[in-house]
Amino acid sequence: MGFLPVTRKDMFDRGWEAPDFVLVSGDAYVDHPSFGTAIIGRVLEAMNFNVCILAQPDWKSDIDFTRFPKPKLGFLVTAGNIDSMVNHYTVSRKRRDKDNYTDKGEMGKRPDRATIVYAQNLRRIYPDSPIILGGIEASLRRMSHYDFWDDKVRASILIDAMADLLVYGMGENTIVEIAEAMRSGLAIQDITYVRGMVWKSKDGPFPDDAI
Image 1 (cartoon, rainbow, N blue to C red):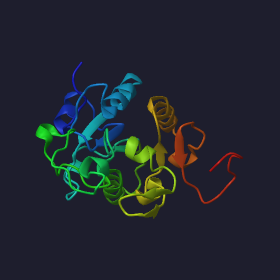
Image 2 (tube, rainbow, N blue to C red):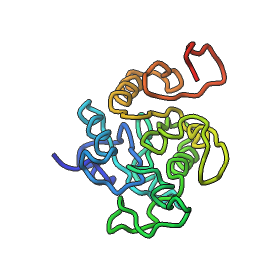
Image 3 (cartoon, helix red, strand yellow):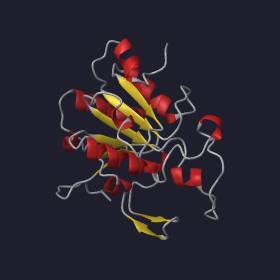
Image 4 (tube, rainbow, N blue to C red):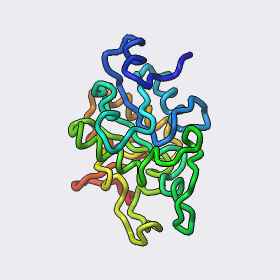
């Protein structure tokens, strides 16, 4: 079993014209179950979805974000195995000198608040593509929350990132259910019934136990 495609050539070698999903991650791509990107990618692959990996894209340019053809279903975005702010700073707000989830520990391969930065870039380049957030950074910021780094209350990361859905916690079953709904033709804004996700709406009706 080979790696999931990380270049356009890898994708074409598999006979794909375009992926179903592009999975964007702040970590280097490591195909091991200790990495959430690998787990989600392989679970979707097992359900016959075509997934490409965009690991540590250069957020200051559009080149990496347009590496693959526009995905048929959408983008999956995660900061990686660890919150990007914790990855970059100590509790004293001092800059760390090593990134344990990057080749050779090199710093500077992901931005602060990586989930937001990646998703905003994708929204600008692909305004009509669904964007789904996941991972620990998104999970812990799924509701309005006190942000230690800014010392203020911030809105849900779903709002700041301009994304459509947020999958929190262990998301394997949730993302498969969402992906299958999208493959069946259901619009992203109509997927509001899956357990383990956050969605936004200005209109009701809302479940009695909604927060």
